[in-house]
Image (cartoon, rainbow, N blue to C red; front, side, top):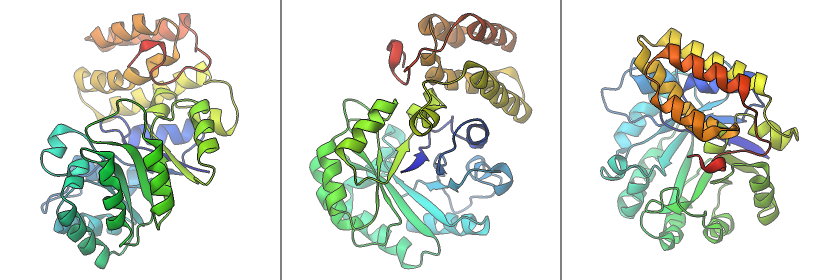
Length: 323
């Protein structure tokens, strides 16, 4: 099985990816938060800075592009080729209202004729492998069959399926019946993405779909960075000392990159929105972290958390009523 780390805007930038690669069982591929290109995009932009080779020392990186304009995609593709990338991922899954409102991400799925023309243009002269991350449709799962007809016309490197519609966001359970349709009908390799939070979730997926050869995990790894160690190396839980080292590495790298307390606090709070579920007294400490307004107080809270609380075996995203 190949394991991919899904992108999450604001969290899985190169600082998180490099630290995860160094401290835990690494993913086979790390997909970047999306680049929204413009024809004036430069290497100095925040999104492109995240994929610069000098900022990505170990992991295999797949940059992700979010656009509904073929010229923008091709322009950014050439920039990424110049950096040495061999694969690019097209984001057709983002459910954000601001993204969908512009006909991008999962919003692009509602315009199938335009999508078909877009794919024809970007694949016609593609100089790298192009994979696609998709949802089932914008409004209804029944849209997926027609979308598969479109995807099957092109040489996709891989089709990563998050089996929900845009309207579902991340609510409810993934639609495994429609994922089965994707497995049966797709002419390219298929990767599963959605609700792999614990080892049992992964094992249930393998029993249901033994033919699946790649899995993308996002929130599950962010909440428990040792999730791949638990799945692959059969460890029971994350080691608290190792998690503290991982946290301190991320904190230190962000502190070096950022100026001022507020941006650093914001970044660390985003991470703890997920990781806090691993600990006893998660609600109490989660509230303290959210309310703190200074790095001094933040560090006191984190020191107390690691000194007084324990890791809960089997904890993961959504456990303890958190998130």
